Image (cartoon, rainbow, N blue to C red; front, side, top):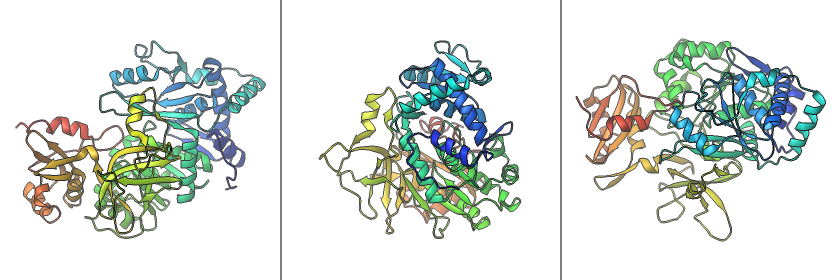
Length: 515
C-alpha cells in the first residue's frame, strides 16, 4: 500500500485516501450489499450533506438505529461528515433501556431505515437513510457545505458514543474522539501489519467497542470488512465454510465465539488456509480452546487484547510467543504504543512482581468521559493516583491485574468480582479458569451467594460433579473450592457474545437453586 505518511485529524481522511489509492477495493460487504471505496466515499459525502441540512450548528449526537449492515457503516461516516457524532443502538434492546439512553442523550435525530418504533422516537426527528441517499443533490453546494464543516472540525471532536451498562441501571455513554480512534487504528495497523489485502471477518455488534478495530483499521488500509451473519455462530462448520468462501484472513472475536468452534471440532472438518491473524478480547480466553486453534492453524498469529470501552478498545496486548498448557492463563500483556498502563495496590503503590493491584490507563486512547454524566465521569476519569504535581487524568478500570516474571500483566478479574470468603480474598475468575481447563467442560462461570457464603460453579459439559471437584483439587486451594455446582445445557450469552453473568447471578445467586 502507498504508505500513510501524514498526520490525520479526522477519520474521513482514511476513506478519502483509500478511495484515491484503492478505488475498486471492497470496503464493506454483508449478505445483501457491498460497497467499494470509491462508492463508499460518494455515499458518505451525499449522506453527510443531507444530514447537515437537517442538523447544523454545534456537533450533536445522532442515533443510528439499524441492523448490523453495510448501510449501518455508511451511516456512521455520513454522520461524521455532517460534523456530528454517531451513537449505534441495538435494535433488539428493551424499549425501557432505549428510553433511558435517549433521555440521557437527547439526540438531534434518529437515522434508520423504515423505523417502526414510532412511539419510542416520537419526540425526536427521524431521518430515513434511503430517502436521504435518494434525494437529488447539487454537487457544488454539497462540496462547499462539507468543506466548511471539515474546516471547523478538530481531532478532539467526538466521533461516536458507545453505551455500556451502569451499576445504577442507567447506561453510561463513553465519548470517543477522532484522535483516540486514529491513534488506535495506527497502532493496530503497525502492530499486526494489516494492509489492503486484509479481509476482516466481523463478529461483534457495532454497538460493542471491539468493532472499532475492524471498522477503522479497514478504512485506514483500504482493506475489506466482511460482516459475518450472526446465525452462523450457532453452526460452527458452516461458519468456517463461510469464512473460507469469503476469504476472511483476520478475525477479532470474543473468546466465546472462538470456543464454540473449538468445542464443536469444526476445524477438524474445514481448513482455513487464508486465516493469518486471530485476535481476541472481551473476556478471558480459555487456554484449552485456544490450543485447539493453535494446533490446527500453527502459522497464524494470535494475540490477546485487553481494554475497556472507555479507552477506545484496547490498552494492553500480548502476541503469543510461546506454548501454554491448558491450565495456564494467557497474559494480557504489555501497554500499546503511546498508552501507559499501571496497577496500584490498596496502599497506593505500584505493584511489584506477583502483587495484585487495580489497573489504570493514560494516553491518547483514553476517551473524553461519559456523555451528560459528570458525576459518573469524575468517579473513574481521575487524577493519576501516583502524584498530584499537575493535572494528569487517567481511567480507573476496576480490573485487577498482577505482573509475572516477564513483566507481562495477568488478568485477575474484576474488582467487583473479588470476594472475601473464609477470611481470604478470592478472584472468581481464577476458579473459572481452572474449571475451564477441564476437558469435559465446555464453559464455566462462578457466582457468589454472600448471604449463604457459597461459591457456585455453573458449568456446561459432560463431567460429573465429583469429577470436577477431583480435578479442581489439584489446581486451587481448599478455600476456593465451590460449595455448589450447577449443570446447564447451554451457558447464557449476552448480546455481545460473552457469558451473561448478570443473568446467572439473578438465576442462581440470590438463593439456593430450587428443585
